[in-house]
Length: 64
Image (cartoon, rainbow, N blue to C red):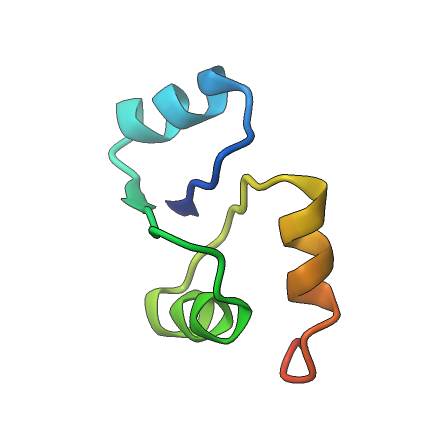
């Protein structure tokens, strides 16, 4: 699994991804078009983000 980690998440999830050999994708800022590109490029399967971040992603015109 790959995991983009934003500023909100239960830390147990972050450590469990690390423990299972997953890859974390960490960004300096919320950029919905970039995040959506990274989802596709890196086959990201799990998102941990604040509701505001998720809302920005699902409302981006390129969201599928």
